[in-house]
Length: 229
Ligand SMILES: C[S@@+](CC[C@H](N)C(=O)[O-])C[C@H]1O[C@@H](n2cnc3c(N)ncnc32)[C@H](O)[C@@H]1O
Image 1 (spheres, rainbow, N blue to C red):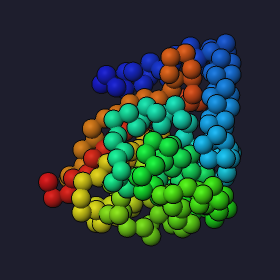
Image 2: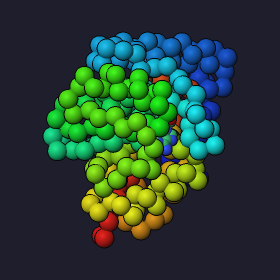
Image 3: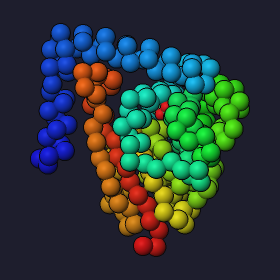
Image 4: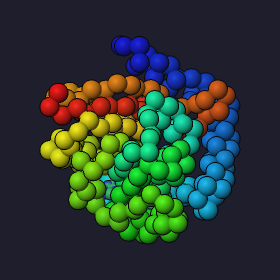
């Protein structure tokens, strides 16, 4: 077992995952994180982006669940968002990630694509008030991936659908891009075995200091694609 897997299992077997007191502590901590995130949503885009919405087709996609701000802070530590960056969240849900990236750099072009129309319409309402934030109410398979430099995936698809999307990226993208995978149970594992893909970072998100923010340890990965390298 490699060091990363050892650390993952260590966190999976930690007291907050395995004892009743630990589980209670985790529940309270996650509730507080949730309230913090809701307040941050309201202060920065005028509405809460927290509510879970069921998938409209579980066989191909997941439900709408927002990434926590603490997880975003960690994942974006080494990802440069500059004035010329073109960011897309594949399956943006209510748009928490778009709000986070827009807050980091208001000149960066931020796009979210969401195929649950009810969710996309909700997101459009707050996003339309911001410059440089665009919501596409539709299927991520209909975008041109070459229009973006940073692509974010919080497990929008089931595994087979993700593989089809990976083929689409390879066929369309003609310049170097960064791909961020959250809740990465199979995404970067699939990509890193392919030519021109390179996983540059992998980490575990569960807690920061004494604050537990995930239900269980979640893997994230940063993957670079450099076509014709
Ligand atoms: C787990 S949520 C992630 C939400 C957001 N990216 C975040 O991290 O805060 C995944 C979202 O992907 C959307 N989705 C799944 N398949 C999609 C597709 N083919 N095109 C566009 N959106 C899709 C789902 O409707 C859901 O809202």
